[in-house]
Image (cartoon, rainbow, N blue to C red):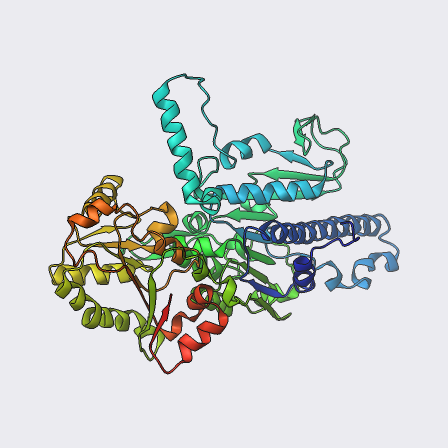
Length: 554
């Protein structure tokens, strides 16, 4: 930089802990700092792999020299004991298997960005195999340019762009038309430093120029390498789970681990975009972390004289670095970090406090009284049942008594959605639902009936909003059955109130349907993380520990 600093302020905070291989939990990632965090972590991964590979190559050459010297001069006793004189532990420079780093991603597009960043850090001298295949399978999908002058197609294209723009830049970076959003993949990547001579097979360097491999220096990178010949494994949790588990023949619901030996010597485990993985299926992440640093079952190809002592003693997990990166703190993420963080170098947790003027509730543009109702419960296992009981005893009877229409119920958890749906069916309430599993035709039909007032209540799940970003029209009353994980979802959903309801339609409705708009959020003391992001740190303490159970924001 102009000031002469190599790192940004955030990187200078992270680097000491990352470089000494301490476990790191970072829950303050956003679009503004994502690149600098990714750059630091990719540099750390490359430094670890290249340092390890260089050490192994140097030891291989030294052992070969000592062995050759010992064989050629067998009569000399001093030379015959050179290997022993330099100490057996000197050569312990590796694990049971070659893979050293595991990086988990939510989509192929995020993996493509990370690999591209690593290759840029290697410089122009890096020679990359299978780059074209990688761009084809992981890069942006090819856009059809037929040059058609069809007016209908042009109109549809313009309408599609307008819809994507409404979904926001964050959504488009993950699921837009110009990114690869596939979540089932696995990729092996090998790095060989100080390449002097290679075969005549043509490869591409970072600048995109072809090279015949004769006398190239720098680092040789091979993408799509076999796992046991890879240094870095880049995968999605579901992709790795498909490789490491299989269905039990006796019980189809039971899954048994298969070959996980390639994960036995992981030194660094990096989980990127943990908040997105949480929306997919966090159990897959826990399943992958459970497979790390286990003792291998196949030992035929292992040189135990080169394996580090802590791996032999079954203590690999205590020397493994775990890095979790997320845009927010969540109980599931915190629990996983607490369970799998065993590093002898300690932990670093970085969390951002939310000032009241920066809370997401400040982005609400609709004039509506927002009521936050605290539901009393004694333990985290009772949160769901306590919230459902409060909704059944206090909220639902009022809705049925007033025959309130245009009521949108936002439900963060799918399990809570099933419970609320069953309750409404039992009470014979007229409603529609929009979930992440519903067909497009069902969603369109349900949204139309809700807007027209033919259905009084709509159930809308948090994961459906995350993956689809629907703009629900026809709502005048909003109930949050649990707070959204993403703080920006709260103002986005509240700002939907009165969307699509014209004055003419409201005049035709009865007085009950034209009552003032309302917003009710049900929360418990165990929802403090979500609450802090919505109302700010200072307000959160008051809402969680205050004597009152109801609070209003206008």
